Length: 183
Image 1 (tube, rainbow, N blue to C red):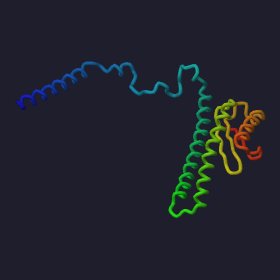
Image 2: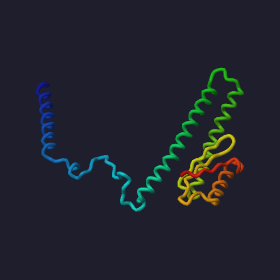
Image 3: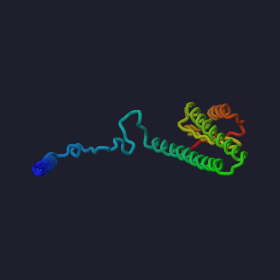
């Protein structure tokens, strides 16, 4: 009885495999005829028919290169900050650390966290004023703000707007602030 059941199961599996091979062989692959592959990107070489996304190739290259700078600057800033944070946490977590060292490490961590929030606020406010991108770097003695300059360049009015944002967010004086237009 068991031998008969086992043979019936094996025969059914063989029948299904044969049917699958037959169907696969006789029916063409519809996706190959349509010229599309699952997972294929619809936007290739940044060409699109969408009027909101169209622009000259030169504009797209400028946006990409400018965006690359700001992305790289943010990444470098974050990596440096992560490395410093790791060193401070290791110093604070070490055995036999005196209270002064622990307090200094915690104060530095708090300062880094505060600077991170302030930089993000400045970047968002500058972009809200109409600039396409911005990255801010707060140091001990001042701040540097790199702004994607418009085609006409960064004028005195734009510099004053950025200066006002930075002064109100950080409390730095104007001689501690550097505004750099990215080209």
